[in-house]
Image 1 (cartoon, rainbow, N blue to C red):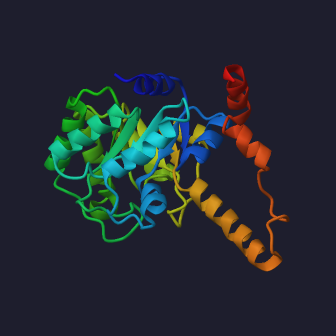
Image 2: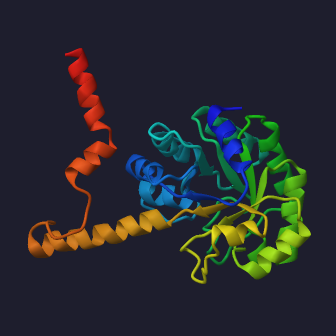
Length: 285
């Protein structure tokens, strides 16, 4: 078991629902940690956007997510949950992915049952692999014995219905997944059905603005339905992109960004640890 995964398990053992906001680079990770959260998340859709400039249509690979995630784990002392999409192949490829994630200090991952290449969970046209194959893929990552927290996701609800998704989630839990994640289930009505069907399972939900019908429940409300982790994967990048849009418009219109609300340069360099590094430099000069 890695140090980071051990810390994540400690956080998950505490009562209540854990909030895991997204981050996508070193600066966003530092800001997340400064805000006081105990767990961070790195989305595959966001990795595809910031790394490749492409939508979540299966372009990104686990090796690219791992490379980008390492820039996060190197600057914050928080457990990171990372997207592993479909595992990028069959059960053996999925097992290799979890081993690679463990090697760079990721604490947990979520693995889904879409066909490969996959697409964003909130898009139409998804397809899922056979249930038996999906269960074996979960079994493979569990039996890799890396100690990482394994979160098994099913996208079956929008394809096969809620009952089929619940059946898959139950099989994933029986195969050893630490948490289960039924994509698209964020409302109280369906969460109640899932919790009644899987009373011993710990759940994860995706509080994502990619869902046009999103009506977020509070962490306290989610906890009542057995939800242990709530992800907020895309909001940070959406907010940053909106802020940058206004900033570039101001530069184009006004000739500078003086009127735009932003961090000061000193605030940024302090966030990056410059005062401490300058003090250390002086010590050795």
